Length: 276
Image (cartoon, rainbow, N blue to C red; front, side, top):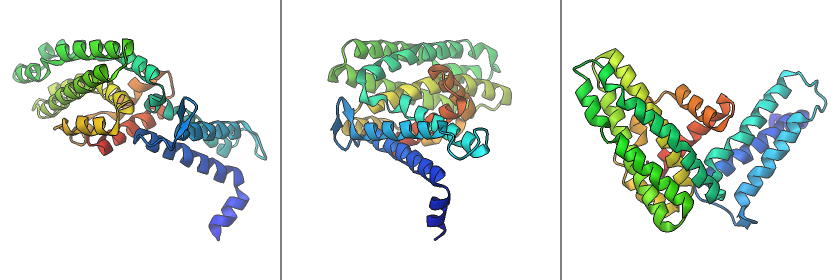
């Protein structure tokens, strides 16, 4: 009875909650490859998500019966912003060309982070430096190859170039995961903190590329990629600083940090659910 009365007394809040739920569910369906049919050049899921987000945005701007500066209106506007932004980077699979370009756009950040890793070994405790260097020695070659394959896929997006991109992003992510676990075992606290910080900067870029590749891959391809991931994300996720990751994502997409935090969490959850 309270549920019915609440809907009657607070129709705008109830409607906004329903629309946010629609956008959230659509995001999950899209990441799982469920399209529910075609709609123009996209899918029914992305169409419904876009319409729900648009209506939510209009509601947030509608003064209605409330003063524009009330807390409820401000909260609705914030949720509308997050709902509008949340699907964009991680649900871009409806446009393969856009995803391919976004993958390429992430490679400078990845290579810059790898360069920082290269210069870190000399700053660590002498007892920890050799192990760190051994764990990260393959980062240069892996990042160069991943960058080249991302550009190859952008130039010629076919099954062959996608398969190469899938294999390399999984291989690099496994190298990064292994390095994170090793860095977590460094005994010197200062060296451990510094090693984790530079490796996780690489991890953010590689994770973003993995999420984008996942969004344009078939279910069977994702299952194959996940099967090749022996070090699972769940094992290293506690080592990743969520605030730092969100700041990197926010800077990359030019968006508010709260939206980036939601995107990062959504991408990590989707990767774990897929078996990575």
